[in-house]
Length: 531
Image (cartoon, rainbow, N blue to C red; front, side, top):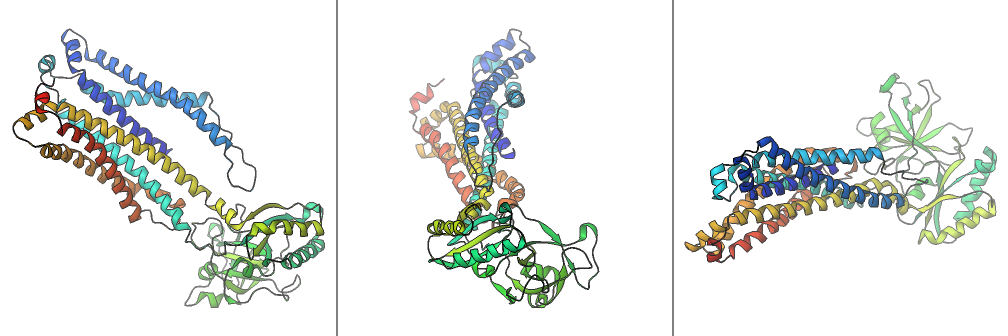
């Protein structure tokens, strides 16, 4: 909504600029109306009616465009693990909202030009002696140009930051290997398996899949990283006073099968992996990550000091779980998250029916899907296997919010840039046309084309610099709110700020240069006779 509001403001500054220019052209008409007795309030109502009519026509066209865009959105299928339907439609509330926004736009951004137009200097206006529009109108037009540049820069910088984040995320380490990975989900409870039957099925499944040609390693977990359904458990360290209420620290966690860390490519930094001695009846054990060790066992070497300690995830009094190893940090819920505490428990000690099997292949993982499905059919032809995808495809879901943000911001940024370029070109072209006679006089007195071009460019460049300055100041404040989609990129990323600013400056200079160059090539005799 903020982005849409900024684009609307840019469009409205364009509207105000055009209305102001139009009102300046009509100053003689308005002066005649005032001279023969028309009240100022009546003229303001007339001009507002025209601006509101323009805004309402734009609103109607916008509604038709919205209907077309909604059809595209409804047809879009996001990469999620469950069916998702967008229930989007235009109803009476949307119609009223569009009507009100259009009317308010016409009133607010048509009022200032109307007020300016209805207080001309009557005698000069009736004689048509001045065509410059006056200092106030010139200042107002300049202010509108500055606003367009500033608002466009905010949107373009936001878009640039998100695009930079998408580039940066390719270098982020999620804590596991992405290449040659395949995941597929199963739930033995769907076939009525009890714990013993489920454990036997899991062992046979791992052995048969691992024996397939082209398979490097295989394991399973009840929760794969960067999946939506994640929960947290309270953590109580043995021998420490228990914290209460909202102050109780917590940790994410999952249950894993044999060879999980080798299959995922996650490093063990201290201690040992789970082994055959970790059974249902043995001491409960866990492996924690670095963030867990730092959070609960500070000091010079929290990773080493965590091994052997015990914690409980249920009550302050236990049962306690012994830490046998420390694994490297990873990304668990969001690819851009800060390191969070995480615990791994052996699946044999904390059994669950719902599992995700992870397969590491030696070549293209998609080539192995058929063979792995064949193993499932051999063990139980009626057990459904779902959410079959490569790890790279799974990672695409975690980046989905950032890609949507980048697409929307880029689209709105380009729209804002187009509006601003057209608006700046229109204002500059109008301003130059008002100075045609002045330009002719200057050239008749000996001014060269380059002198006229420099004079006209100087004013436009000054406006561009002021607009960029305001835009950078606003961007520094606004982009800090985008931290949740900026993965590994600062909200004040220098490359994005400089690159976008230079790009916008070039576009603005082109919009300024075209009418300025055309004006510098006017024949002085034609310019002197210009009315």
